[in-house]
Length: 332
Image (cartoon, rainbow, N blue to C red; front, side, top):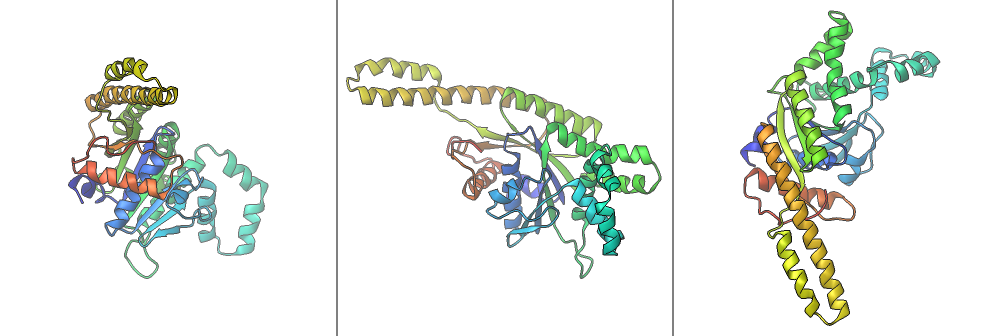
Protein backbone atom coordinates (compact mmCIF):
# COMPACT_ATOMS: atom_id res chain seq x y z
CA UNK A 1 0.00 0.00 0.00
CA UNK A 2 1.27 3.46 -0.89
CA UNK A 3 2.45 6.08 1.63
CA UNK A 4 -0.51 8.47 1.18
CA UNK A 5 -3.09 5.87 2.22
CA UNK A 6 -0.75 4.28 4.75
CA UNK A 7 -0.48 7.62 6.52
CA UNK A 8 -4.24 8.15 6.39
CA UNK A 9 -4.99 4.73 7.88
CA UNK A 10 -2.66 5.37 10.81
CA UNK A 11 -5.54 7.44 12.23
CA UNK A 12 -8.48 5.77 14.02
CA UNK A 13 -11.31 8.11 12.99
CA UNK A 14 -11.85 9.30 9.42
CA UNK A 15 -14.68 11.57 8.32
CA UNK A 16 -15.68 11.59 4.62
CA UNK A 17 -17.54 14.83 3.88
CA UNK A 18 -18.67 16.93 0.94
CA UNK A 19 -21.63 18.27 -1.01
CA UNK A 20 -24.56 15.92 -1.45
CA UNK A 21 -24.40 13.83 -4.61
CA UNK A 22 -20.63 14.00 -5.24
CA UNK A 23 -19.95 10.36 -4.31
CA UNK A 24 -19.19 10.59 -0.55
CA UNK A 25 -20.76 7.25 0.29
CA UNK A 26 -18.99 5.48 -2.57
CA UNK A 27 -15.66 6.98 -1.48
CA UNK A 28 -16.28 6.03 2.17
CA UNK A 29 -17.12 2.45 1.12
CA UNK A 30 -13.99 2.27 -1.04
CA UNK A 31 -11.78 3.49 1.82
CA UNK A 32 -13.41 0.98 4.19
CA UNK A 33 -12.73 -1.88 1.75
CA UNK A 34 -9.09 -0.82 1.30
CA UNK A 35 -8.53 -0.52 5.06
CA UNK A 36 -10.10 -3.92 5.79
CA UNK A 37 -8.02 -5.50 3.03
CA UNK A 38 -4.97 -4.11 4.84
CA UNK A 39 -5.98 -6.09 7.92
CA UNK A 40 -7.66 -3.29 9.87
CA UNK A 41 -10.85 -4.09 11.77
CA UNK A 42 -12.96 -1.39 10.17
CA UNK A 43 -16.37 0.04 11.03
CA UNK A 44 -18.07 2.17 8.39
CA UNK A 45 -20.79 4.37 9.90
CA UNK A 46 -23.33 6.39 7.95
CA UNK A 47 -25.15 9.21 9.65
CA UNK A 48 -28.34 9.62 7.66
CA UNK A 49 -29.63 6.13 8.41
CA UNK A 50 -30.55 5.46 4.76
CA UNK A 51 -28.53 2.24 4.62
CA UNK A 52 -26.98 3.10 1.24
CA UNK A 53 -23.47 2.14 2.38
CA UNK A 54 -24.68 -1.33 3.34
CA UNK A 55 -26.35 -1.79 -0.04
CA UNK A 56 -23.20 -0.64 -1.86
CA UNK A 57 -21.20 -3.22 0.11
CA UNK A 58 -23.69 -5.91 -0.88
CA UNK A 59 -25.43 -6.49 2.46
CA UNK A 60 -28.79 -5.63 3.99
CA UNK A 61 -28.68 -2.73 6.50
CA UNK A 62 -28.86 -3.75 10.17
CA UNK A 63 -31.17 -1.95 12.64
CA UNK A 64 -29.85 1.54 13.47
CA UNK A 65 -26.99 1.42 15.96
CA UNK A 66 -26.03 -2.20 15.27
CA UNK A 67 -23.12 -3.34 13.06
CA UNK A 68 -23.69 -5.56 10.01
CA UNK A 69 -20.77 -7.69 8.87
CA UNK A 70 -19.82 -6.83 5.26
CA UNK A 71 -16.51 -8.71 5.13
CA UNK A 72 -14.06 -10.62 7.34
CA UNK A 73 -12.78 -7.36 8.90
CA UNK A 74 -15.45 -4.91 7.74
CA UNK A 75 -18.75 -3.92 9.36
CA UNK A 76 -21.23 -1.19 8.49
CA UNK A 77 -23.58 0.65 10.86
CA UNK A 78 -26.21 3.39 10.60
CA UNK A 79 -26.03 5.99 13.39
CA UNK A 80 -28.84 8.29 14.52
CA UNK A 81 -29.11 10.59 17.55
CA UNK A 82 -32.38 9.28 18.97
CA UNK A 83 -31.18 5.67 18.82
CA UNK A 84 -27.86 6.69 20.41
CA UNK A 85 -29.73 8.27 23.35
CA UNK A 86 -31.85 5.11 23.74
CA UNK A 87 -28.67 2.98 23.75
CA UNK A 88 -27.15 5.24 26.42
CA UNK A 89 -30.28 5.02 28.58
CA UNK A 90 -30.27 1.22 28.30
CA UNK A 91 -26.78 1.29 29.85
CA UNK A 92 -27.65 3.56 32.79
CA UNK A 93 -31.24 2.26 33.32
CA UNK A 94 -30.94 -1.54 33.44
CA UNK A 95 -34.54 -2.00 34.71
CA UNK A 96 -36.55 -2.69 31.55
CA UNK A 97 -39.90 -1.56 32.95
CA UNK A 98 -38.47 1.84 33.89
CA UNK A 99 -36.79 2.09 30.51
CA UNK A 100 -39.98 1.30 28.62
CA UNK A 101 -41.84 3.93 30.68
CA UNK A 102 -39.21 6.53 29.73
CA UNK A 103 -39.36 5.65 26.01
CA UNK A 104 -43.18 5.76 26.04
CA UNK A 105 -43.45 9.14 27.75
CA UNK A 106 -44.51 12.11 25.62
CA UNK A 107 -42.01 14.36 27.37
CA UNK A 108 -39.13 12.09 26.31
CA UNK A 109 -40.33 11.99 22.69
CA UNK A 110 -40.78 15.76 22.62
CA UNK A 111 -37.36 16.33 24.20
CA UNK A 112 -35.58 14.09 21.64
CA UNK A 113 -37.42 15.71 18.73
CA UNK A 114 -37.16 19.35 19.78
CA UNK A 115 -33.98 19.88 21.81
CA UNK A 116 -31.68 21.98 19.57
CA UNK A 117 -28.54 20.15 18.57
CA UNK A 118 -29.27 17.12 20.76
CA UNK A 119 -29.40 14.59 17.91
CA UNK A 120 -26.20 15.96 16.39
CA UNK A 121 -24.37 15.81 19.73
CA UNK A 122 -25.55 12.28 20.48
CA UNK A 123 -24.67 11.10 16.97
CA UNK A 124 -21.10 12.39 17.30
CA UNK A 125 -21.04 10.94 20.83
CA UNK A 126 -21.97 7.51 19.44
CA UNK A 127 -19.20 7.77 16.81
CA UNK A 128 -16.73 8.76 19.56
CA UNK A 129 -17.90 5.75 21.61
CA UNK A 130 -17.28 3.37 18.71
CA UNK A 131 -13.84 4.90 18.04
CA UNK A 132 -12.88 4.40 21.69
CA UNK A 133 -14.84 1.17 22.30
CA UNK A 134 -12.99 -1.74 23.90
CA UNK A 135 -13.65 -5.43 23.42
CA UNK A 136 -15.66 -7.02 26.22
CA UNK A 137 -12.84 -9.46 26.95
CA UNK A 138 -10.06 -6.98 27.58
CA UNK A 139 -8.25 -3.78 26.83
CA UNK A 140 -8.00 -4.06 23.04
CA UNK A 141 -10.05 -1.68 20.92
CA UNK A 142 -12.97 -3.26 19.09
CA UNK A 143 -12.19 -1.30 15.88
CA UNK A 144 -8.80 -0.30 14.44
CA UNK A 145 -10.53 2.28 12.26
CA UNK A 146 -13.93 4.02 12.20
CA UNK A 147 -14.89 5.71 8.92
CA UNK A 148 -17.82 8.14 8.96
CA UNK A 149 -19.91 8.74 5.85
CA UNK A 150 -20.94 12.26 6.90
CA UNK A 151 -24.07 14.14 5.77
CA UNK A 152 -23.95 16.90 3.13
CA UNK A 153 -21.72 19.94 3.73
CA UNK A 154 -23.91 22.23 5.89
CA UNK A 155 -25.28 19.41 7.99
CA UNK A 156 -21.80 17.92 8.46
CA UNK A 157 -20.51 21.20 9.85
CA UNK A 158 -23.51 21.32 12.19
CA UNK A 159 -22.62 17.85 13.54
CA UNK A 160 -18.93 18.67 13.92
CA UNK A 161 -19.67 21.98 15.69
CA UNK A 162 -21.97 20.51 18.34
CA UNK A 163 -19.30 19.09 20.71
CA UNK A 164 -17.54 22.49 20.68
CA UNK A 165 -20.83 24.29 21.33
CA UNK A 166 -21.84 21.90 24.12
CA UNK A 167 -18.46 22.25 25.81
CA UNK A 168 -18.72 26.05 25.75
CA UNK A 169 -22.36 26.00 26.91
CA UNK A 170 -22.05 23.48 29.76
CA UNK A 171 -18.49 24.20 30.92
CA UNK A 172 -17.36 21.92 33.75
CA UNK A 173 -20.61 19.96 34.15
CA UNK A 174 -21.06 16.34 33.07
CA UNK A 175 -22.21 17.24 29.55
CA UNK A 176 -19.42 19.81 29.23
CA UNK A 177 -16.76 17.31 30.35
CA UNK A 178 -18.01 14.58 28.01
CA UNK A 179 -18.17 17.09 25.15
CA UNK A 180 -14.57 18.12 25.88
CA UNK A 181 -13.45 14.49 25.54
CA UNK A 182 -15.13 14.32 22.13
CA UNK A 183 -13.55 17.64 21.04
CA UNK A 184 -10.11 16.41 22.13
CA UNK A 185 -10.53 13.35 19.90
CA UNK A 186 -11.82 15.37 16.94
CA UNK A 187 -8.90 17.84 16.91
CA UNK A 188 -6.12 15.29 17.53
CA UNK A 189 -4.16 14.88 14.24
CA UNK A 190 -2.78 11.54 15.44
CA UNK A 191 -6.31 10.12 15.64
CA UNK A 192 -8.69 12.02 13.35
CA UNK A 193 -8.78 13.33 9.77
CA UNK A 194 -11.54 14.97 7.75
CA UNK A 195 -11.43 13.92 4.10
CA UNK A 196 -13.25 15.99 1.49
CA UNK A 197 -14.96 14.60 -1.60
CA UNK A 198 -15.97 16.77 -4.53
CA UNK A 199 -16.49 16.82 -8.25
CA UNK A 200 -14.53 19.40 -10.24
CA UNK A 201 -17.53 21.62 -11.03
CA UNK A 202 -18.50 25.11 -9.89
CA UNK A 203 -21.01 24.48 -7.07
CA UNK A 204 -19.32 21.42 -5.50
CA UNK A 205 -15.97 23.23 -5.58
CA UNK A 206 -17.48 26.36 -3.96
CA UNK A 207 -18.93 24.23 -1.14
CA UNK A 208 -15.65 22.34 -0.77
CA UNK A 209 -13.70 25.59 -0.36
CA UNK A 210 -16.20 26.82 2.23
CA UNK A 211 -16.02 23.57 4.20
CA UNK A 212 -12.22 23.44 3.95
CA UNK A 213 -11.88 26.92 5.47
CA UNK A 214 -14.37 26.26 8.27
CA UNK A 215 -12.81 22.94 9.26
CA UNK A 216 -9.31 24.43 9.21
CA UNK A 217 -9.94 27.89 10.67
CA UNK A 218 -12.99 27.51 12.93
CA UNK A 219 -13.11 23.90 14.06
CA UNK A 220 -9.31 23.39 13.94
CA UNK A 221 -9.79 19.78 12.86
CA UNK A 222 -7.01 17.91 11.01
CA UNK A 223 -7.54 17.44 7.28
CA UNK A 224 -6.84 14.25 5.35
CA UNK A 225 -7.15 13.73 1.59
CA UNK A 226 -9.12 15.66 -1.04
CA UNK A 227 -10.87 13.22 -3.40
CA UNK A 228 -11.79 14.56 -6.86
CA UNK A 229 -14.51 12.24 -8.07
CA UNK A 230 -15.90 11.57 -11.57
CA UNK A 231 -12.97 13.11 -13.42
CA UNK A 232 -12.99 13.16 -17.25
CA UNK A 233 -9.77 12.79 -19.25
CA UNK A 234 -10.56 13.24 -22.94
CA UNK A 235 -7.41 13.20 -25.09
CA UNK A 236 -8.98 15.43 -27.75
CA UNK A 237 -10.54 18.90 -27.90
CA UNK A 238 -14.04 19.98 -28.98
CA UNK A 239 -12.69 21.67 -32.13
CA UNK A 240 -11.26 18.32 -33.28
CA UNK A 241 -14.75 16.83 -32.93
CA UNK A 242 -16.12 19.74 -35.00
CA UNK A 243 -13.60 18.97 -37.75
CA UNK A 244 -14.72 15.34 -37.86
CA UNK A 245 -18.39 16.33 -37.89
CA UNK A 246 -17.89 18.32 -41.10
CA UNK A 247 -16.91 15.08 -42.80
CA UNK A 248 -20.22 13.41 -41.90
CA UNK A 249 -21.78 14.78 -45.11
CA UNK A 250 -19.71 12.24 -47.01
CA UNK A 251 -21.64 9.40 -45.35
CA UNK A 252 -24.53 8.46 -47.64
CA UNK A 253 -26.10 5.81 -45.42
CA UNK A 254 -28.62 7.51 -43.08
CA UNK A 255 -28.17 4.96 -40.29
CA UNK A 256 -24.38 5.27 -40.34
CA UNK A 257 -24.70 9.07 -40.34
CA UNK A 258 -27.05 8.95 -37.31
CA UNK A 259 -24.67 6.71 -35.36
CA UNK A 260 -21.68 8.89 -36.27
CA UNK A 261 -23.59 12.00 -35.18
CA UNK A 262 -24.28 10.50 -31.75
CA UNK A 263 -20.61 9.55 -31.40
CA UNK A 264 -19.67 13.14 -32.25
CA UNK A 265 -22.13 14.46 -29.66
CA UNK A 266 -20.73 12.22 -26.92
CA UNK A 267 -17.19 13.18 -27.93
CA UNK A 268 -18.05 16.87 -27.69
CA UNK A 269 -19.65 16.29 -24.28
CA UNK A 270 -16.59 14.43 -23.02
CA UNK A 271 -14.28 17.20 -24.22
CA UNK A 272 -16.50 19.76 -22.49
CA UNK A 273 -16.45 17.92 -19.16
CA UNK A 274 -12.69 17.48 -19.40
CA UNK A 275 -12.25 21.25 -19.83
CA UNK A 276 -14.58 22.00 -16.88
CA UNK A 277 -12.86 19.43 -14.65
CA UNK A 278 -9.44 20.82 -15.54
CA UNK A 279 -10.48 24.41 -14.75
CA UNK A 280 -11.91 23.62 -11.31
CA UNK A 281 -9.19 21.11 -10.50
CA UNK A 282 -6.67 23.92 -11.04
CA UNK A 283 -8.68 26.20 -8.74
CA UNK A 284 -8.68 23.56 -6.00
CA UNK A 285 -4.96 23.03 -6.42
CA UNK A 286 -4.33 26.74 -5.86
CA UNK A 287 -6.64 27.16 -2.84
CA UNK A 288 -6.67 23.83 -0.94
CA UNK A 289 -3.55 22.60 0.80
CA UNK A 290 -4.42 18.93 0.97
CA UNK A 291 -3.01 15.85 -0.77
CA UNK A 292 -5.41 14.76 -3.48
CA UNK A 293 -6.56 11.62 -5.19
CA UNK A 294 -8.45 11.69 -8.49
CA UNK A 295 -11.11 9.09 -9.29
CA UNK A 296 -12.09 8.73 -12.97
CA UNK A 297 -15.74 8.70 -14.03
CA UNK A 298 -17.07 5.14 -13.68
CA UNK A 299 -19.87 4.37 -16.10
CA UNK A 300 -22.75 2.32 -14.67
CA UNK A 301 -26.53 2.56 -14.80
CA UNK A 302 -26.69 1.53 -11.14
CA UNK A 303 -23.93 1.49 -8.58
CA UNK A 304 -23.10 -1.64 -6.57
CA UNK A 305 -20.19 -3.56 -5.10
CA UNK A 306 -18.57 -4.12 -8.51
CA UNK A 307 -18.44 -0.37 -9.17
CA UNK A 308 -17.13 0.32 -5.64
CA UNK A 309 -14.28 -2.08 -6.37
CA UNK A 310 -13.55 -0.08 -9.55
CA UNK A 311 -13.27 3.03 -7.37
CA UNK A 312 -11.02 1.11 -4.93
CA UNK A 313 -8.68 0.28 -7.81
CA UNK A 314 -8.67 3.89 -9.02
CA UNK A 315 -7.88 5.24 -5.53
CA UNK A 316 -5.03 2.78 -5.04
CA UNK A 317 -3.60 3.59 -8.48
CA UNK A 318 -3.78 7.35 -8.06
CA UNK A 319 -2.42 7.25 -4.53
CA UNK A 320 0.70 5.80 -6.13
CA UNK A 321 0.72 8.52 -8.77
CA UNK A 322 0.49 5.94 -11.54
CA UNK A 323 -3.09 6.37 -12.66
CA UNK A 324 -3.54 5.96 -16.39
CA UNK A 325 -5.89 8.88 -17.00
CA UNK A 326 -8.98 7.95 -18.87
CA UNK A 327 -8.75 4.20 -18.26
CA UNK A 328 -12.17 4.20 -16.57
CA UNK A 329 -15.13 6.36 -17.47
CA UNK A 330 -18.54 7.05 -15.90
CA UNK A 331 -20.38 8.18 -12.83
CA UNK A 332 -19.60 7.22 -9.24
